[in-house]
Image 1 (cartoon, rainbow, N blue to C red):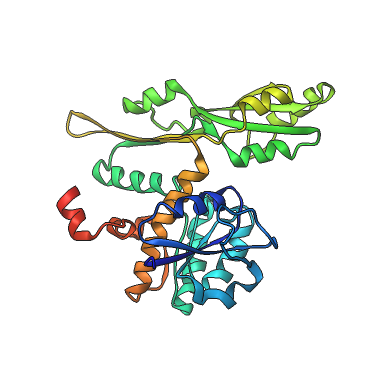
Image 2: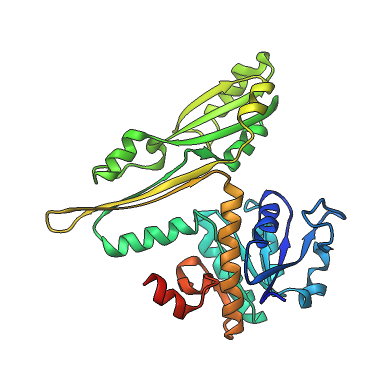
Length: 323
């Protein structure tokens, strides 16, 4: 039997990616999937499908639950309920609210004796680690984060909510000029709106195009203030060219050490965003289990988890091999 029994909560794109990648782990097995649906078309038809409402009744079947839920409403509302009964790992990605989410999860987890690792994934997550390490090494450096080129799921969803839009995606594209300036340490106080282009591809009726484009360009929090490109295409082109889920980006830190320019850059090129996010979440499930086994409780971000805890390799071997 594997060392760590994992449960999945939620079965959208992320949940399906977790299910697939659990099979690659040398020390994990999938114990079941919790869903609001009665039946699922799972990769393994023998995988138990359990009701989300009955989560607390089945905690003897697994060690860690991976919360594959949406950040907009599901994680804030439901994660505290799950952590009250079992250790969890989530991918909450509302940067401005992570401190509050961590504090809420910490309070419940400590009372329950469980471990929550919050806001895993690539940003927040892997980018968070790199921003912290690079700034610690070069404390006076300029630092900029660039997202893309890649499909933004949140912005694409916002497009699809516009009346008359049948299908739509939005790609976030870093400005090459801005990226070059950051690498030279010359980007200054460049902000995200100046550094990115938001490129939209929309399927709708021709009669609605002018109204829809205006609604896109004037949508607060999503498109106002950005350089926006709106492209209207037919459904066949959309299905042929815009159904993938790529993403990625760069964290660029460039600073001076007494007359010498030093640059640190962390880059991700992701062919399928949910798969990579799932891979990170799974690694932190290992850490959550080990922390609880060591008697710890409470909520942690990726900044607080020692790197060796996420690896299936022993600490002694890691030191011999990688240090």
